[in-house]
Length: 117
Image (cartoon, rainbow, N blue to C red; front, side, top):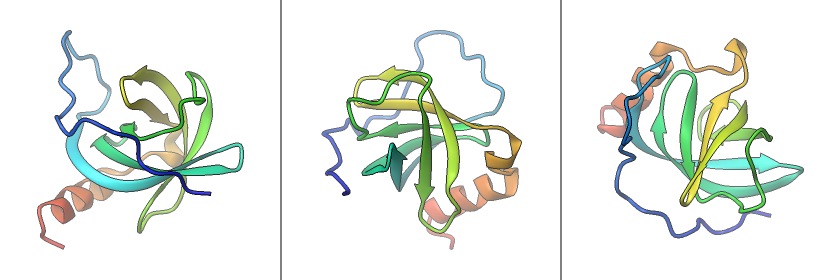
């Protein structure tokens, strides 16, 4: 069953401390579905990189260190690990290189968000 997207802020995520990221992130709005333990829920990706994403609208019973399946329209499912909770959602890290996005895939998402595709 797909649940409604939780009330989520539309402001971009702004870190308050120095950022130590392996991959640069881009702000984007992508509809997605997150699945855990056979339960699916609608969600929205607001921040995406080759190695992870910030996802709003996820179930409250999800927690750090849980593995989930992330479904982005037009893409194959990707396994991800919840690494951090924040108000309204979670940060996930894609589980290993085979689940990471390539730089070309990330560029295609960015181009599509600009209306280029």
